Amino acid sequence: MTTNYDLGMWLVSKGLEKLNPMNMGGTTDLGGFTVSLVRADHSSGDMTNGTPIYLGNPCGAIVKAAGEPTVYHLGDTDIFPDMALIAEIHQPRIAMVPIGDRFTMNAATAAMAVKRFFKLDTVIPCHYGSFPIIDATADKFVAAMKGHATKVLVPEKGKAVRV
Image (cartoon, rainbow, N blue to C red; front, side):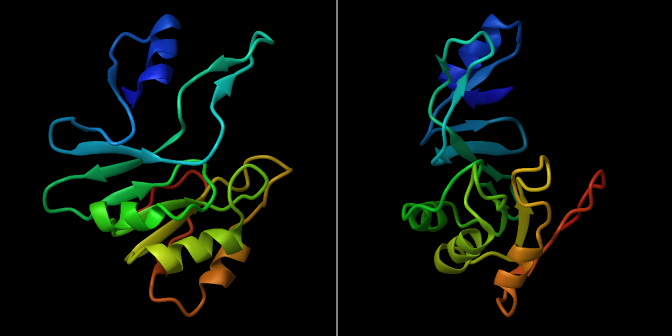
């Protein structure tokens, strides 16, 4: 498993045996592909036992494999201007973008991030429809992306997607 150092050490304390720790700005080669961690604006902690445990800075992940389009999973995040730097440095062609609102950016803000900062071939909305207090569907995001050159791929629950 690859994750930020703080979360990784917590997972090791819970029994994880194979950890490949890293942190934001770093890249690790996982044999056939690399993963780079980048900034995400969110919270990170565990309250299982009633006492907050810090689990490190939240991250997005950039996945690169030779001859394949670069994939960017934004993680749980809000929009932030450094997305322009992430786009310039990593040049993702596919992105998974959180749209659920309340705990991540909403559909309109997510569409703004895609349109303003990225030159994507395909965007996949995520982090919606999992529990009642966030947006139930990707409909608002699809509407906000209408007319933009980026293809919106809305996954069906339980089915793999092919880009």
